Length: 434
Image (cartoon, rainbow, N blue to C red; front, side):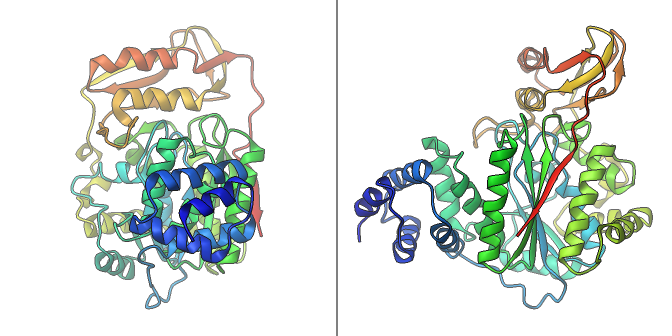
């Protein structure tokens, strides 16, 4: 077979065979199928999709393009969580030590932020000395000892996905549900999981802007998980407003530690508890969400979850004292207070505008090569449903570069809608399972 034959076949809406898909992914990984040929394939997939059989094989071929982790020596249930990304979404950081403290092993492989959404790796690397670049031996050793590890994707784990994502980013084929689903699931299935919880964000601050597309993505990923024998549950959650009150990197670590102390904002705490509880159900630790919530509340109240976070920080080269001394985290040298132009009730806070403004301040990156300013960010003082007086603070902008402020303020100009009391949107839209 040749790449041209497969391009023509998929262009014309035909299904590729299992052998054709495996040859294509293997040849692309090795470089014998060129970038421009694979770009043509991805555009054909973008336009014509993949059926269920094609998608299962495509994901499996991606997963086996490099190393597949083997955690057979670990007797604890191995459950992970993945979010499709949103503004202020730091859920993974408090969730992982909470769930691990309850007896679940979590081999979490995370990514970096791009555009208006933050990345877990960028946030963790704000902790002095913390490294997310772990070889397979150290990754497994930390997981065995502590029941959790938080790292980046290695060079040999699903290399086809790394090459393909860069190509999709440059060819306008990122928003393809089968390509998104196979990208996420190939990495997660390579972790040798027993179960997976997905947080699929919906709204203006998410990649999936409406519930229909988010539901389709969730059901697609659940189908892939089922085809590979991995129980997968998805939650659709609202991302029309930033999650929590901190958007940035170091300030999101501060808020994550607040959750582990039982002092986090209500919305962030609630979604963390729901997703963490589902992980305990998948791991067989508890048989109901109510029992799981009680167990999670116990490891917060006792300090076990926070202490475990400190232990893993140290195991990954970081300064564990950060959990007691937040001043060890990076901070910005300047702040600007954004004030309410009128009195009333906050009807909405536009997540996308806040995320883009934080990126403009230096908290995010427009290209993969951009550097992150770990101290830059935005603290929200007023969120949906809260009353404000004219001149009262809406947000504090933290920054190190004055040249960035004007652009951020322009983005925030209409981010807060103030008027009469709104109808509050539910944080949890739906739970979806096979």
